[in-house]
Length: 267
Image (cartoon, rainbow, N blue to C red; front, side, top):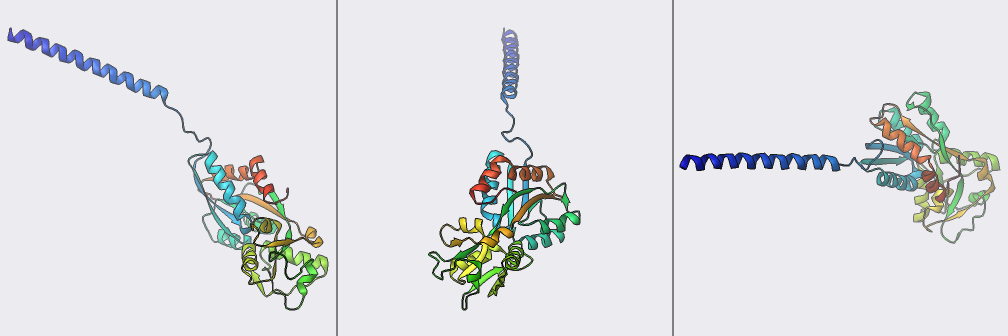
């Protein structure tokens, strides 16, 4: 009698185990059938974008927009004067994408075979005179920047905004005598905003993005020095697929919308 009870118990335990195993297998199959792929389409990972200082506000927004639309991506930025960024890339800085404020600086990299593929243009920009709100020094044209005692700042010659300044000087026959020459357009803007300078030559987009901290004075000769902005993938990028995808996004309809809202012109 005791043996019969034990045998029955063993058989029941086996049946129970088999039943549990069957339930377990069914659950796994159910979980596999409901699994969904990642929400991110396209390449993932991270890249570092080297971009001209005048692109800081727009590219920061474009990077955030891209990350939001493509989970699993991280877009990091390094902003400075285009010529400084070129030097860093030439010296081996780990950049994946380069966006220049002019074509000559991009050419330095393409000629050295440091850009993979093409370097298409995505925007244009022109200079404007930044002055204190209300224009207390009554600056109305480029020639007014030569007035005695007026503290004027510009970009240094190797920087795209510096090259553009030289071009408008030649076009207008005006020779400026700045109290300082800065390595980026944001440095010029900062000196006008802080009151360290009475006026400075910056891009129209810098004035638009200053949030009322400066006023802008347009001048005719600015049309003689239109800067074209190209973008390219740096040779040897650690994530070339994402670098190409972000470069394409900058040139897409969504990227164009952000750039035009900031005051950049079409390429």
